[in-house]
Image (cartoon, rainbow, N blue to C red; front, side):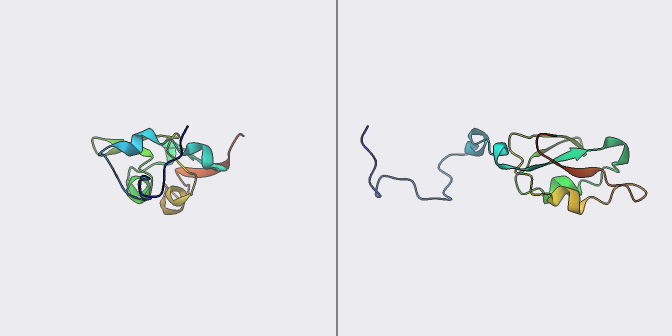
Length: 97
């Protein structure tokens, strides 16, 4: 197999076609995963708004499950979650537990 030269390689951070992010499942990078505690959720959608990877499904104005194939475990969703009555709706757990 012949390696590409620098002129033939696509520059980094360049989107070459619409929807191509679906092809890159980056969830295996994380060491912590968010867990949604639905009973504590007030449907504020802060988690969905702040998620840098769009790893939270939303439909009809309500949040859904995590798309773990794309979640890198940054914890922003858990940080931004106000929860209900002092109890967070998203907590971070160590991956593999």
